[in-house]
Length: 484
Image 1: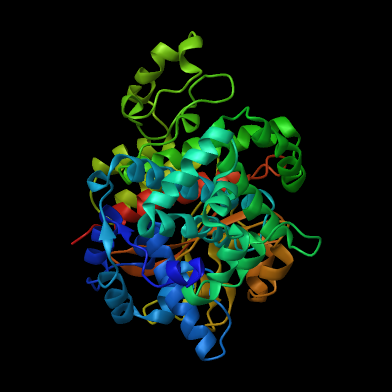
Image 2: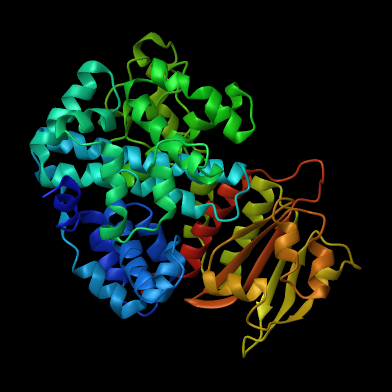
C-alpha cells in the first residue's frame, strides 16, 4: 500500500475545541453560514471534511468543483452537514506525547498562518474570490497533519531531520518516506475529494501554473522556511518573488508578511495553540501591536527579544486601554441593547476607525423582492444612493450577496464585471468610488445590505481596510444575532 493510500484510508481528526463548537451549532436552526464558516476557517481537518464531501458529490453528478465554504454548506444542506461533522473523529493536543504535540501544533500553526498570508495577498492583488486562496493554503498542510496522526514516529524523524539540517519539512518527509512528497500530496486530491484548484498550488513551480497557485505556493513555502527565523537564507530568498507577486517593493511586502503572521497568531490562541516565536516579533525584535490580547508568557520566547531594549515592556501592550478597533467595538457593544442601538454603534465605529463617511443601509421589504435605502449618512440631498429603490430578480449581484452572507469589496479591478450584474439605477452611485457591501442579519434573518464608501477619492480603501471592515462587521453581526 502506498503512502497516499495509507493517509487516505482514515479520516483526519479535528481539534476538540472547534469540533465541539461546530457540533453544537449545526444542530440549531438559527445558525448562520457566517458562524459555520468562522469555525471551518480555524481547523484544516473540518475544512477538508466539508469541501471533500461536497466535491465528491460534485464529481459524481458532473457539477463544477466547489472552492468556498459558503458554496459547500449550501450544497450539502444542514442535515448532511450535521451528520458529517458529528461523524468526524476529534483529538485533544494536551493528551498527545510531547513530540507529537509539538509537531501538530507547528503544522496547525503554519497552516493558519499560510492561509492568512494567501488571503491577504489575494486581496492585495484584488483576486475575485480571495477566500478560496485561504482555503487552499489551509489545506496545503493536510498530508503532513495526517502523517502526524497516522505515523507519528516517522513524522518525528522527519521533523528532527528538518531541524538538524535546516531544510524544509516537506523535503525531509520525502527522504524519510522514500517517496516524492509533492507527488504524494497530489495523489491525495482525488481520494480526499479536494478541489483540483489545489493540485496546481501543490505542484512544483512550472511555467503553466496560474498566478493564483503561485500566491498559495509562496505562502506555504514562506511558512516552511520562517520557522527557522525570518532571516534564514531560505526565507529571505523568497522576498523578491513575494514582492513581484504582490506588486510591492521588498520592504513593504515583507512588512505585510510579518503583520499577517501576527494576525494569524491571534487565531492560534483561540484554538489553544501556541504561536511560533517568529509570529510574536518583527524583524527588528519589536513586538507588533495586536488587536486582541496575546498570552506572551505562554508562547516560546522569541530569540531576538532579550537583545531588544523595548522587549521587557511588551507584555504590558495587550493591557493598554486602546487595544484596537475590533476590541474597542466589542467592548462598546457589550454595554448596549437593542438592534437599532447596536447598528448605530457599528456604523459609528466604521466612520471613526475606517473613515467610511458615506454609508447607506438598504432594507428588504416584507416579501424580500425589493431593496430600499432606509438610512444614509454623509450623502448629499440629491444623490441617488440616498433614496435608491431596487427590484430584485434573484439573479442580480445584490440577491447573490444576500444569499451568500459574505462582504464584497467593489473596486476598480472587479467593478466592470459586478456593475453589469446590477439594475441600471444602481450602477451610477457605485461606478466611481470603491464600495464595501455587506449583507446584514438581525435575529438570524436577512434585513438588507450595508454599503460603505470613503468620500475622498485620493484615499481609496486598501486590502487592510477591507480586512478590518469584515472584522468589525463580524463583531456587529455577533451582537445582532446572539446565541439562543
